[in-house]
Amino acid sequence: MAGVWSLAQSRRLHGEVQRLSRCTKLCFAVGGAPYQITENVVGFYLTIFLLDVVKMHAHHVSLILFVGRAWDACTDPAVGLLLGRSPRTRIGRFMPWIVCSTPFAVIFYFLLWYVPNFHMETSSKVWWYLVSYCLFKTFLNTLHVPYAAMTMFLSRDSKERDSATAHRMTLELVGILVGALVQGLILQAYGLQGGTRGIIESNGTCTSPHAANASNSSFNDMASLVEAYKTAAVVIGSIYLACIIVLFLGVREIKDSPNLNRRPSSLSLHRRMRRIFTYRPYLLLMGCYVSTSIALQLVQGNLALFFEHVLCMKGKFQIMVITVLVSAVLFLPVSQWMLKRIQKKNMIIFGMLWWIPFLITIVLAPSSDPLAFVVCAASGITVATASFLPWSMLPDTITDFRQRHGDYPGQEALFYSFFVFFNKFAVGATLGISNLCLSFAGYVPRGVEQPKNVMLTLQVLMAPAPIILSFVGIAVLYPYRLGHRPPQSQGAA
Image (tube, helix red, strand yellow):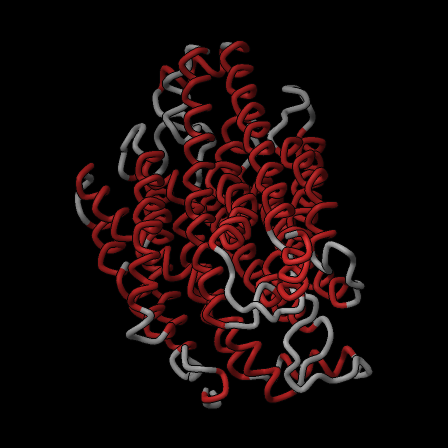
């Protein structure tokens, strides 16, 4: 029996067994949850945390977010280049990076939510959170880039890779949901225990004059709020660690990438990069992904403030976030079924067009709980398509590139790292500009009533800007010609 298992495992490592077990797909999918959990908790809560708990000025928050995301983006290609030169070990080429980076990522995630001293000077606060943010992003990228590149080393069968990617996206969305629940419930629990129910209305923001006065006058209330964020960081860090253990125990890489026109590694890095960045399908796919990601991040980054100050919906932010995520999770199986009938490109176009009328409605229509619920549920469809399909199309693009230009060692990591790099850089710059717009409009930290200019700015960031970016993404993707047909029959883009 042991000999049979060893033979099967050997064949699996060499890619001879094409089909992946459901267990392997699930273990691989679980490994993607930590990145999405932490990224989305940071995306939804960090701005509010720095503005209303740490009490930073909006332009300092903008500086931290912009520099941190720029650093985050720059580490992606650096990790990709190092991965391309990494030798294969007994546990694979990518797994050592994931395992070794995990403890450091967890530590700096905790420090990102730690308030060392209430009376710390402003410059010291800025440096504390900037360094913590940059180091956390560095170690998070040493998980994300090798994990994403590992997709090409799960199987030689593109359908199996698509299935594994679908499992990954489903578990990532579930992970986001779990992260939102954990973060929100812990904040709510500490708010109730600390007598600051008004301070924390599911989104960690101040929602009443009484709560604002209480938080400013009572050290105990603020200490309880700070403790809540620390506790949530510990819990989410533990989830991060558990997910990586599951990934390590349940997934094995095939020994080599598929031998499609295998070439020696003598080609210079400059020439490899030139071939990648002159490959039209890759540029079109990346341009679409960047545009749609910016649109989604603009909505995500300003959703809490929009619900708080424009819609005046106290305590509804958390349930609306959960509604979006549940809708996205439920739509992913539907999108898999639809992909059997239409191309991935057309699914993305459908998803980006779908949410436009709902964005217009939420901004122009009078505030209403049922209307907000419908808009959030409908937006989950766009979140699902924009999050899943570009990552499902990237392996097809890489496979076509290898057929045209040959297969060079480590090139998969370059494709994935630069795919992430340009997206992060653009998103970081956009969110930094978003915070600057709020600062120039006169945003008041912990202010119950904001100036009319802030209200108008939030409305622009929630509808016109994402809609324009959605159309840009559609226009960029339209010439893309690679579909879900077998790679050998896919035409040039």
